[in-house]
Image (cartoon, rainbow, N blue to C red):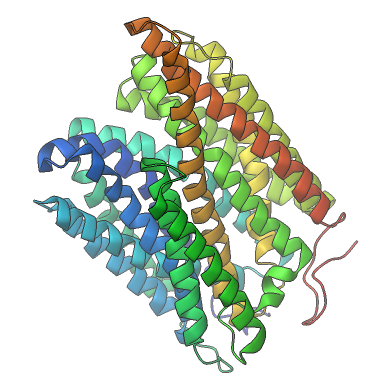
Length: 486
């Protein structure tokens, strides 16, 4: 696309700033609310059993509506879908911040998820269609990937600061500032470009995909708070698999599929989606269990815990931008993503050496730096290759698949690793006389068990993604041809 033909070309770097701000808001929202949960629970007086719904409501709406949100952007133009997503997210955040009851807070979180499902794919697809020149695209995706990889750690720090010095409600109100700036920038900088050859909306596909993703996310969330053998857990997971199988069958037969299978069946793109999903499962252990460990075992405050993750954030930013701009054009995605997975595995194995009173500097910091480099090598190239060579009218749904894999991966990671950690802690206590030290040892045993499993997932992902990704440098190809070049 030439500069004359692309109305965004002259303003592309300012547009990147707006899109990056929106991406940061969506990603950090997952962890910033976690920091606020204990204070919110005390203020609104809801039970421990209900507490999970503050997280689950967001995940259910976000995860189940992403494919629909991506296709809506393709159909109606991404500028206004992006702005509507930002505005809705801000309104939902304000509703949650003013909530005086548990029910209102849950509704607000669900609305945040729904508008996030409009916002996130629109942001990534706008990035895809704005930056088409390879060198500039690599720089843009390096920045965007760094924000995607570090947003969760930023959320922990920001959540700690806001909760400690203001109120848990400001963990929601802060989105008004993010969204306000992004809306002003989008309204000024973006030009709406509705597709002239836009297909009809695939209603059967939309219903089966949304219901299937909802069932999967709910099933994994329910497993985390009950058990894998629970009838509700099994029922929802089975329903999710069946509905998604029906969805795939429908996509092969309908004239205007919600998710054209050519998007996911491309070898490099499919491997990139898998890389995002598998790393999403494994990465969950870092933020959840390490946050518990820092606060409960090492005595860190919420702010200190957030600061403890900053070295990893900086490592991600440096790694993501360097890998995307300097390495990807030379060696391609295969060695970068494979190396990132190996570094993630090494970092997780290093964390298995923690004890109840270990030193942060010697037992935690090195692992965070190793994993930060690894995450940067994974996220930026994977997000770039996942949307490389996609036709403009499919950019939204291809982008939505990146977010969907990240969300499903996070849901699986939450359920799987939480269950494994809890089971390991319980088994540890069964053979020992309870005491304060033994309880602390049991908790750490649960964390290290989760870290071992995360290391195993990274190792498997390294093998699978390296096998699937083609060697060489990926490059856009004419429609109908594979996006690959030596």
